[in-house]
Image 1 (cartoon, helix red, strand yellow):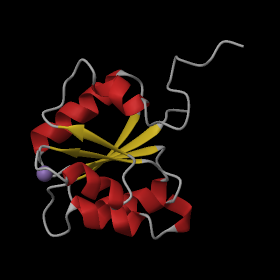
Image 2 (spheres, protein in one colour):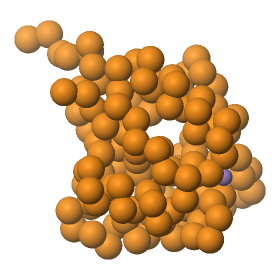
Image 3 (cartoon, rainbow, N blue to C red):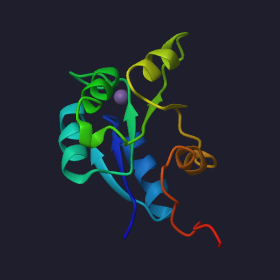
Image 4 (tube, helix red, strand yellow):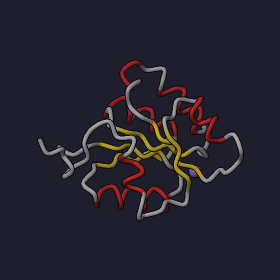
Length: 131
Ligand code: MN
């Protein structure tokens, strides 16, 4: 069974690129274009990891992360902020909201998957440990 990754991102091109790269590496990608949809999908699907854009319409990524963390069933799902904000304090703000990591946009296609996998709590496909 494929590992599910939820991508919450309102920008079509960024969403497409992230999904394309992750699917190419064998992941099942769930897509949400806004925070509310993302939270609903997270609760329904229990993804292994959530990639969260910070600049989102209505509810920003910080608010989304805080709400996700209110559900005990979602508490163990790592949330990685993905943002083009480069203001001092953004990383700290993301971590304070419940994110465990922070990736900067634009996505670098060469390092994106390995950056994501650093935060993945389970072994990525095809990379099972040899016993
Ligand atoms: Mn955005």
